[in-house]
Length: 327
Image 1 (cartoon, rainbow, N blue to C red):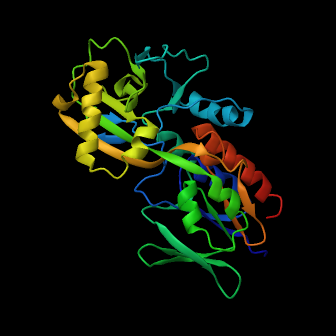
Image 2: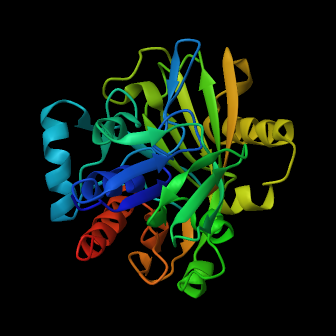
Image 3: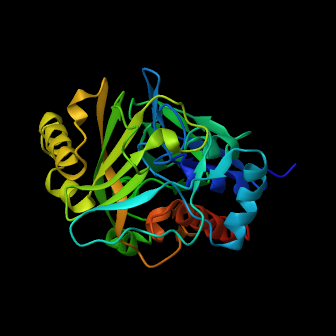
C-alpha cells in the first residue's frame, strides 16, 4: 500500500483549518495550535456571563468559493448577517454605509472554524518552536516545551508573517517575499455590565483617535444578552504603545472612550484588555501563498492578501489547489 504524505500545519485559524480540510483528502494532516482553542483572530471571550468577539468583528463574502463554503453554515444557523445601527464618531468622518452583508459566526466568532475543523487531527496548546531535517529527509517538529511532535514530509505555517519568518529554516526559498510582509498590532478593550440602553447606535467607527471601533457586542446574532461593549484601538496607536504597561493602555483607552462617546467605561463590572501583536496587514508579499516544493515548506494566511477573514480562506484555497497537484 502506498504511504500517504504527512503534512504538518502550524496554526488553526481559518487558513489552517480550511487548508487542513482540503489536504486531508490526499494526505495525512495534523494541525498544531498554540492556544487553548481554534479560530485564531476569529476569537470570542466568555467571562462572568459576558461575551466579546475580541478579534475579528465580522466578515464579508465576495468570492464564489468562500460563498459556497459559507452556504451550508448559513443554512445551519452557524453564520448570520449582522445589521447594526452604524454611526461615526470623532473628527472628519462620515457615517459608514455597508453596501454588502457583514456576517458573524454564531454563537461566537470561533464557531465557524470549529465547524470547519470537524474531523481534523488538531493538537491544542502546542507551540512549535523549531523543525529540522531528519536523515531520511523529513521534517521533525519540536514543541516549545521540548517535546517531539512527529516527522512530516511537509510543514506549512499559517501563523502571522513575522512569526512564520522566525520559524522557517534558512533553506526556505521564499524568505525574501515573506520578509516583506508586515502586520500591525491592536488592543481590544472589553467592558461588561454597562447600561447601554440609551446609546442610539450598535457600532461606531471612530476617526482621528486612539480608538477606531466600538461595538455593542450583544447586538450580534446569537450572543448572550448581558451588556457587552467591545472597543478596539487604532493600529497605529497600538504600534506606538505596544510595549506600554497594560494598566496605562487600559486607562488611556477608557479615557478616550469617555471623551468620544460619553460612556464611563471604568464603571463596568467586567473590564479586560487583550493585546493582539499581529492584527492588521500593513504590507503583503504580493503572492497568495509562499511555496517551496524543493524543501517541502509553505506558508499562507490573511497576510498574503487584504488581511480579512476571506483573505485567509482564499490563501488556503489557492495553496491547497497547488499542493494537491503533486501529492
